[in-house]
Image 1 (cartoon, rainbow, N blue to C red):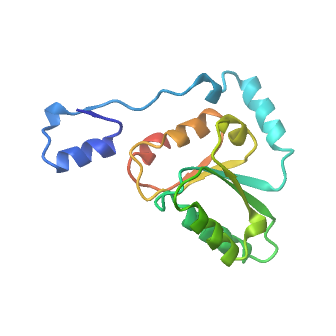
Image 2: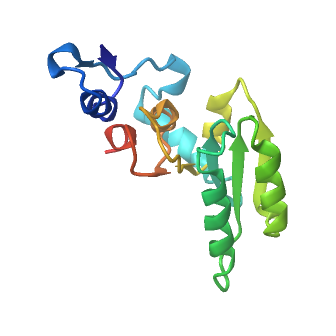
Image 3: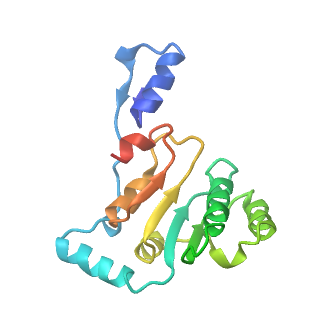
Length: 170
């Protein structure tokens, strides 16, 4: 059996699969558009990011109820309670069955001006390049390819310490 992370390997072992039958092969198939190839590309990208205001966080995930969207909203709400906190923006890219619930939750917390709901997108590199940091607070993740994509575009990430995520973020 092939496991995409040691986290998955441990799960398989806990279900009685013999260790000798499990091989970990990380999901490292990133399209070249996600990778910065030179220091110059990195520096130009960060120079352009410096022109973006306010500070922008990005989350790319399906709205399943398990990808941490509610926790992101709660964190932004806590941040906005800090006196004289500079403005921030969180762009949520993705779609799914819980999208309307998260939108309603954002409105109920009075945070509409802090969020941009981008919906599904075929141009994730553009979204990565127009943000300052990536945030992914999933309840469970076997690998976290979105975190590898964010890292490939030079974005620092805030992520939950679950599943395969710690194997992507060092």
